[in-house]
Image (spheres, one colour):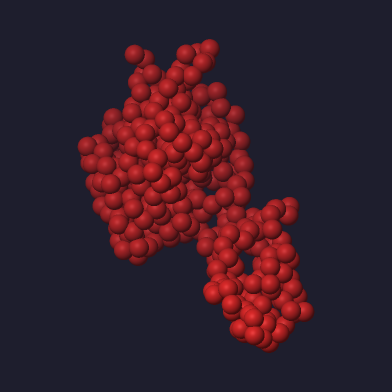
Length: 382
């Protein structure tokens, strides 16, 4: 078996083992224990922080460090949690050959209609392989690798937000959570804001004296109608939850709408939030209702440019792998947002995930191998 084939086989086996362990956000204990054992077997020191307690989960972020003789400290990251699984459907990941002229294409998916979790266990498999490559590199010839496996990413980057990033003392970083193709890196991503609209009416008996009531549900419907749902250029907003009301014989006096807004530019985000609040107040005014608007920054965006150290390293290594590096922007967020905000220049590397967060999710092991080999060579690993 060639070295390339051995790499694909290791990544396939690691990914299948990881994806077979259920780990929805806040229930990552089993997969964290699995990854910790794998890191220790490679000679890395391993510790777990208190993020689990802080975010209401059963496991914290896992930090594995493999010392090197070169001066730089390189952060490599993936998150271990997944979106919720489909209840009652077995979690049974499989690898199957697909028609391909090179005879090398192996797709990993679930046998049943279930979420695979390659977002981001494919990234976890790559980080483990990079630690393996670093362990096979003479100490004096390798940088120190600081592998961080975060929890709660799918619930708003909870683990990364709770992480003591400064204590990692990282000089640069690579996150393996890019939904884009191999060769593309996410060099810019959005600011994200949580939104709450509390619509207030006046309670009354729905049969005896409905005229005395101010129907909060009707007012909330007007707010939804006025809300700038969807994409508008470089900004996007959504409402995802409606809560309120009660008995059918009562005019409801309160309805709460929750949603989010995203933008690449902080000023554009502020303008969008102002528009949402203004439209909501204008919508409820004629109905004699009122609205309380609140928002909270979930994470900041970033824009690296083309010349930060991680991108420079990837660009230098790209030709040897037949890669034409491309930098892209993502409307989604990742742990990359947190690392950049806290002073570690970090890029999110595309690993070719497909149909993420759905029961049709799949990934090609060949893409994992290409991304892993590329970044490993960029770091000078054996």
